[in-house]
Image (tube, rainbow, N blue to C red; front, side, top):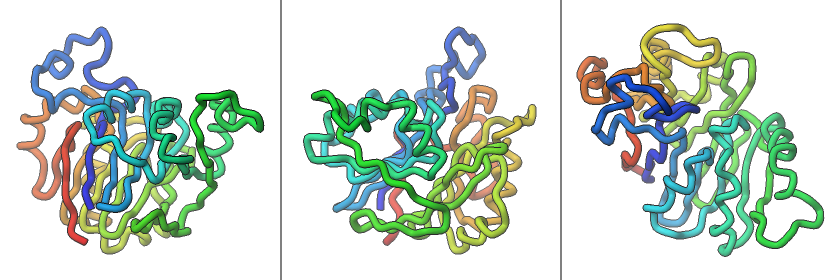
Length: 255
């Protein structure tokens, strides 16, 4: 299984419009972060986790082939704002989108023209499916286990794929859901910045503590804002087994 980080930034992206901090002015490509999304692939199956407003830019360099499913963590714009750009992939057939009841309801309101009874020509052909934390689903040859994450007071979803787990926008997770991550070897988890606590996002220290709780051998941090610091400098300070992810990064996981 191959994981490609399409975006590792927060809702503003990095650089932040109008900001002149050293991160936003950096010429290091690893300091440029589009909105958060990953591509999960085997030879047979291709899944997206979230489809933010940068999707078109993110997917253009990738091979053009069928997308077998889109897994939604939650319906905030930076995670679903690129849904209309899925249209070219509909030539392969209807695209299945999976979301929990809260996100599904919100998407019906945000994109009503995609789900109308009589759709006008050219709109995305989307099959919207309701899923629930703790209930496995099979998409192609990939087994997916949704887990419930608390984004402040909003319940959202993270996803486990075998020994790999992807979690973003988390502030906390109940113990019964952490138990569903037992045996995860590689963890991706959100880490907004080092200081200034946020009401609905973890800081780097929170993410590292969570990784230890899960017992992951390797942890990659995502959903980072410019306040996290310069990629190269920060990576040298992190504990063993923890690293900042970056846009375009690929990791290959054993079967």
